[in-house]
Amino acid sequence: MRGKTTEARTRERIARIVAKKEGLIRLSLQACAHCALCAESCFIYRQSGGDPTCTPSYKAINSIGKIWRKKGRLSEAEYARIGELAWNKCVLCMRCYCPVGINIPSLISAARGACRERGVLRTYDAKRNA
Amino acid sequence: MVKATRKPLEEIFGMVKGFERVLVVGCGGCTSVCLAGGQREVLALADELAECARNARVPQQYACFVTERQCNREFLEDIEERVENCDCLLSLACGAGAGLLADVYAAVPVFPALNTMFLGADLDVGLYEERCRTCGQCVLGDTGGICPVTRCSKGSLNGPCGGTQQDGSCELGDGIHCAWNDIYDRLKGQGRVESMMVIRPPMDWMEKGPRTLVQRGFEGRYAKKPAGMPQPRQEREGAAARMPPGAAADKARLP
Image: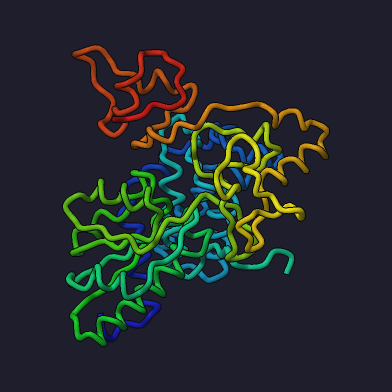
């Protein structure tokens, strides 16, 4: 490990997270028919008044799906956007329903793991309205 | 949410110093929120322990990972391969999470790095107050949302003990409010003081064995099936085995 840059080690850790679920990610991206039936099972989607970016499938495809397609080589800003999707638009309540059987929470959890490795994570000690 | 706090560093190091490869496992749930077991806390603890190991000349390697929720079996699968390459696990989850981690990876020693304190509310960043003792017999509806079991120093369930001071504080002092004085004030403000006059039987503190909750509507799913039919997974069997099919029990207690 000695000699590798921090960046290389971070990429390696992200690649490990993605590799663990690669089969699931690949299959999910192929199987998703964009039917949007998962939307109605998501309370955040319903509460948002139908914001399409709150659809569970959108969150999965545009988080871990994007990380997988780009092999983890995303900019800080892109990881920040994925973090926004994975934390602020999903609470991992695991109630999303997919008629095809895609395990959306597992995908979102992988996206969160990749974001954490990148230093993008939810903080709980920031003062509100500060 | 569950509130926890980190054990002293010496105690944690004492638990893991006999193991060469330690996987520090954080939790993205409650202990992240209470700033005890999230990503930052995991990395900080691993750094501090590595420093302890260097000082004590103990050859050790620390790896880190944060699961989404350690109290959920599905999320624990994320660390399966990492567990194969470690000698022990150090959990930064609550007792429920650390316990489930130990169940799932039963062949590997699991040590808790946190002390689970209580179910509490966030008063401010890093400031929490106990609000619930999970007694399973909630009376908040009759006490104006103030729990006498948790907030009264004596856990008095049927009114104040007689030690209420003139200013509404508890006889124990130290700025503690008398819960029953607060209950009276709140109910009076709502115009329903009579609801605190209900005399309740003593709470059943004897049966405090491991409890299992089957949520309303899920009784059928976890009911025991006739012989020959596939049984529910073992971890779900406890509640189901003790409930008649279709019974609308909210809680089942395991012996």
